[in-house]
Image (cartoon, rainbow, N blue to C red; front, side, top):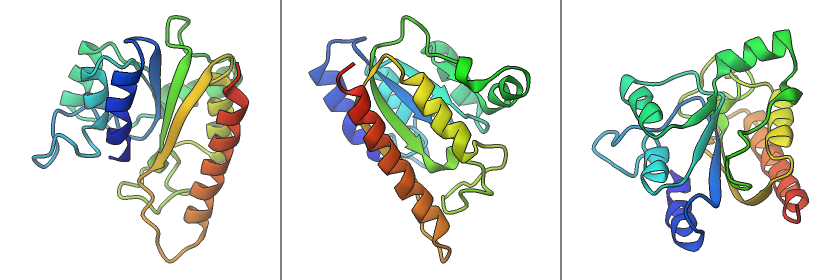
Length: 186
């Protein structure tokens, strides 16, 4: 739910439609509330679209009927995990792009459960069928091409006794910082 803090800033600092959120996640996070909280990690993207911030989701593979209804109502773009799997097997992830009318300025939020649970088990909801390391890096690179990254976060790491998940999240954060630096002057 760290992303909740960025939403008022994005809403208040930028004219509507000037900045969009690129979300990597296993879940849509479009529920109105979860366990009674409207600021839950499962509701954070609902707050974003309610604030009028365009949203594009990548890697989704677990959702509720409420999530699907909100995705349709708020016209949320997406490359779900099943689509990415078929795209990877028939074409290339490098051919993907965000819609041409999606904002050129991006806030990137990366929930580590977007990764396959074999790579990232140190999260509250590890889920099979997710992204590999190189798929994530490829998608981050191609989907942010010709755009400016104005901010980013990496969320939902739940460190455990194994050190590789924490290292993976750290390496991802480092990559995003470099990518944001590269994409800040475009």
